[in-house]
Image 1 (spheres, rainbow, N blue to C red):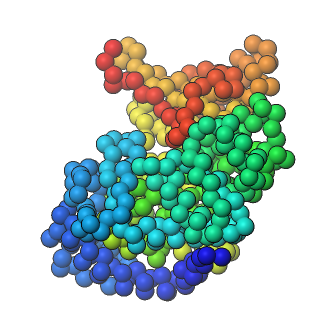
Image 2: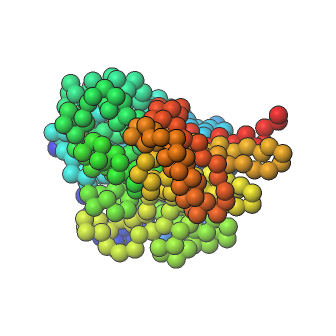
Length: 429
C-alpha cells in the first residue's frame, strides 16, 4: 500500500499534546494574513480549551477579505485555489500550498482506510471536479492509497452506470440525492445494482441527509455507506469521516481543533448537546483559519469508539443555522421535513419545499414523490396518503402544510447538491 496512517491511532493524551504544540505556530502563521494581523498577539495558549480566548471567524469576514485577506503565504507558494460553492451567499476563495494538498489527501485517505479499503479497490469518484473541492479531495486520496481511480465527476448517469459495470467499481463517492437518482435510473433500465455492480463501499457528503436515506442507499446498492464531512474553508471533504462502526464521524484532531458552541450565546455546550461546529485549522499553511463558524449543527458523541480511534466523534450534520426557515413564526429546518417523510413507506426519494406568501400569510407546500406502487393506487387511496403525510408533517413541524404528490421522477433533480427549498416570499410580484 502506498500510504498508511499512524495518526488515526493517536491516544487522547497525544492528540491534546499535539494540539497545544501546534497552536503557537498557528498563531504566528495566521498573523501573516492581513485579516488576522495584530489581532492574535498577547494571548497565552496552554491547553486546547484556551482556544476560546481567540476571536471567532465568520463567513462574512472571509467575503469581506476577498480575494487575499486571509492568505498567509506569498502567492508564489500557492499551488491551488478553490472557490466555495456559494450556495448560501457570495463565494469565497480558498488557497493551498503543496503541503496543504498533501495533508488534505491524507485526511481523506485516513477515512477510506478506516472503512477497510485498500489498493485493490476500484474507486469511481462521482463528485464534481474543478472549483468544487469534493472531487479532487477524494481523487488525490484514492491515488495516495494506490487505488485505480476513475475521475467520473458528476452527472451523465448512463455513463456512470456503464463505468460501474465495465470496470467493476468497488468504491463510490457521491452526493446522497444523486445516489438515489442513480438507483431510480437503474430500476428503469432493468438493472439490479446488488447483482450487476461490485460496489462495496460508498462515501456520501455535500448535503445533509437522514439515517433513513443512508439505509435506502445501502439497500439499493447492497453496499455500506459512510458519511464524510468537510467544507471548502477548511480544505474540503476529510475534516471528519465515519469509520467501519458507522457511529459518528471522527474529526482529524491532529489537523483540526473542533468546538461545539451555542450559536446564540457563543459559549461551549456540554458534551452530547447540540450546537454549532467551530473549527480551527492547526496545520494549514496558505490559509489558516481560527475558530471558524461553520454554521453546521451537530453534537459530540460521548464515549469510546470500538474502532480504537480516540479522535473526537461528531454526529451527522443535522442542518445549518442559516438553513432555518421561519414559517408563520415557527422555526423549521429542512431536515425535519426529510426525517418525517422518510418514516412513510410510500414516500419515494425526492421532495421539495416551496414557500409562498399570498395575501400576506406564509404557505408551505411540500412536493413529494411516491413509489410507483403507491402512485398506481386509486384516487381515494392517494388522497388518504396525502392526508397521512400532511398529518405527520404537522406533528413534526407544529404547523399545517400542504402536500402535493408526484409520480417517481416527477420532481426536478440536480446533478449537484439537491435544491430542497424554493422560497419566493420575499420576491416582488
